[in-house]
Amino acid sequence: SGQLVDISHSEDPLQAYERVVQRAGEWLDMERDALQSILEEMDDDLREAGALFNIELADFNLVDGLLDQAKEALMVRNLQTIQHVTDLQDNQNKLESTTRELEEQSRRDSLTGLYNRAHLDEMTVREFELARNNTWPITVIFVDLDHFKSINDTYGHQVGDDVLKAVSRILQENTRDGDVVARFGGEEFIILLPGGGLVSARAVTSRILNALRTTPLRLSPAKTGVVTASLGVAVHGDKMNFSSCDDLIRAADSAVYAAKHKGRNCVVEYDGVMDVTGESSPLAATD
Image (cartoon, rainbow, N blue to C red; front, side, top):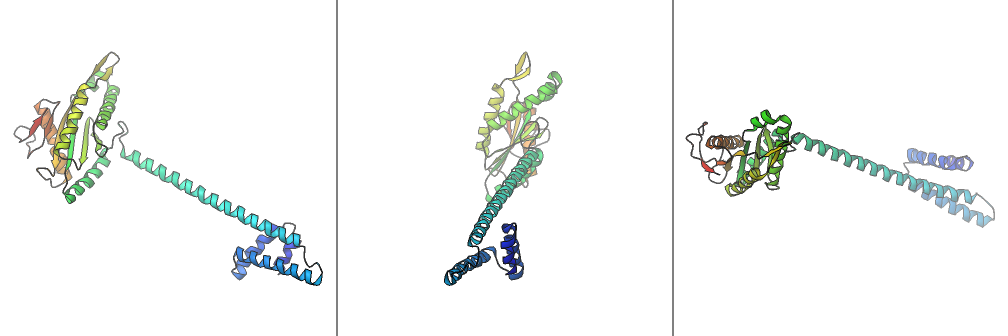
């Protein structure tokens, strides 16, 4: 009661009221709404008592004003809390967005924008296990640009970088949305076709070879030219199964070697155990 009396004599009644709220919580374990209800009941009781005895027992305007100010302060506090929660959520969303962007950047090759070798390794392991567990096919297409070293030696590494970026765009434009296109290293790329077998691989490699053969690239201010590639294909789940994703990639790599030995600018499909020279391998070669 003494705390309540102090409110009417305080120079800042609202501040005094907040002290009462704090004390009510500490001493009586009373919530703000419960205290406000008590004050409203006291206000009603004082009015009735004053009317009954025809005397003025309290400054009702002070009580009304105090309650109004308390309600307004509570509303402001609630709005501030809501705004604070909203700001925290916005900050959390921005942090999550930044984290996702950083994670995505860590998966990308800085030059071409394709997935990098580390992310390719993760995806290959995951997709190979999914293919094996669900008995659906998975294909690896190994792409190796022909005579790329001569481009760097003749026109410079800047032109070589531009060629790599242009080829990367061609690879992305001629693969499906669900395919994984990655830079394996240097002028080598790998395309992973989850759920895709030999039919899908032939369609993709045909588009890529045709696009490379018909897309002129700027090699110097006065010269354009086309860049070809040798492609090796290895399929798990159509006619043969591999024991690991590493074996699948090695098979596609062996097929690339055979494609280069065959004359480059073509596709070779792995179809058995290959000699490292590509000489005596049961391979299917396609233009």
